[in-house]
Image (cartoon, rainbow, N blue to C red; front, side):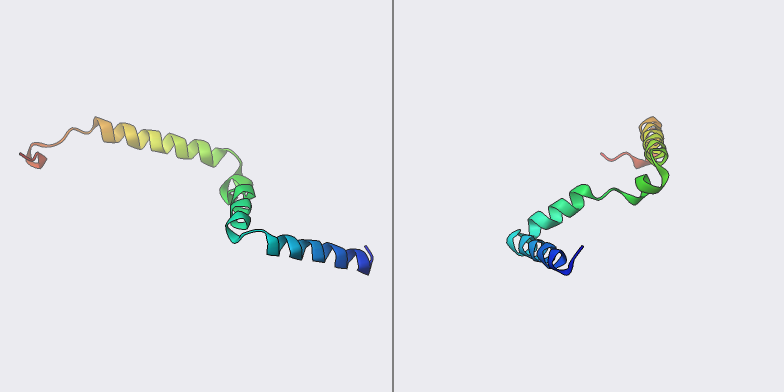
Length: 72
């Protein structure tokens, strides 16, 4: 890449940066960013998280209120 090509590229990047609103740039950055947990460990953490959440939900539903905790 020659110096002229590099300058052209940098000018295009700078113009794009100045023309796009901050919120749009932030939205694009967040949209393409992959969570680091998925990036490093794949789908296993997602499956584990879903399993744990389901177990906690089942445990929460199965617990019956005690007599002393009822309000009138």
